[in-house]
Length: 444
Image 1 (cartoon, one colour):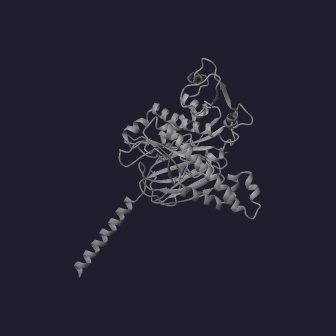
Image 2 (cartoon, one colour):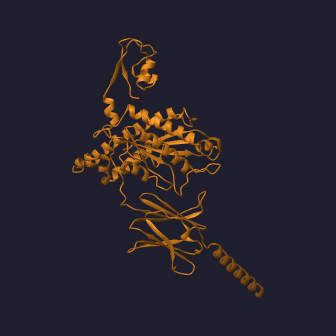
Image 3 (spheres, rainbow, N blue to C red):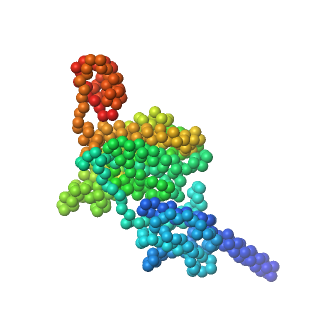
């Protein structure tokens, strides 16, 4: 009996020792802090060795966010972290609740919305505590852009969304290339091409290396009255073999789901329907009329998205192999606007070593940007939005009467249009034209 008691005591002591060791091992450590500022939002990310056990509260006069991390050491130097945020003034330690915890104070420049949450490990990061600070007072920016050449014909607005950003790197290539850097580089090149074209105007959803939630991205496009939303990404797979570009549109199933969500939120009807909402909101059948109008808007948006994606694919295949030769439909968070034609362009597989190398090559990025731009330009030249400069130009039909010594190729050069397009507009099957024949001259 005595021997049994001794054995039990030893087991108990061993159990207590193991539990103590486990508690020591479970002590959390701050390994880093990253601050990602954007125009209206700042994200702070604490890198930790284990899952954080935290609580938080806000203080005013001055504005502060206080975070308590249980069972965490105070070894990381917060003062060494680069901070370019207009929202965050300082991040510092304060007196903790107890000896085993850490209290962090984020001094704020103004009152902001706060969202604090933990994220599990995902390559290349470990456990993280994320703090999103949103300044709702930041203006959305210009909503209607008029072309300098006209006081009545507006620019066609193209919103360019560079995928991922900030602490979300996207896919990572074999040589550690980050998708977020590639997408931003291509988007900037595409923006420059669009802005050089009279009648077009680019709006960058993300202008730097910071995070924007997928649902927020189409909202930014709507705030700028965008006529088209283009999200740029780089594909990836678990093996290096897949390659090629593809273009995606919103699936009909997801489209109907999103339409239902918009219908449930009556206060957002006017955001989509403009002045029409002021008429229908005073009637008993407001919901049914709103549903009809929104359904028509979604139908037009999906049809236009599909048409634009085909034009972009037609141009991309001259630059790169196509992984998918026709537009693909999928449930994607960034393609949820029922009123804005939206496409997502996968520029290639970053997981493929050859394509990763190409995507990091400036000349190749330029070719991709030029191909996407050509597809966008083709669509809007043929179907410009009402009220735009291009719509106004399209109403003016330019013709030419063929004179002696003139050929189709000479006229194509003179009017800066392609020979193929000149023949297509005039339904010509050969390059032969007759003296006195009247030709329609398409826009260049």
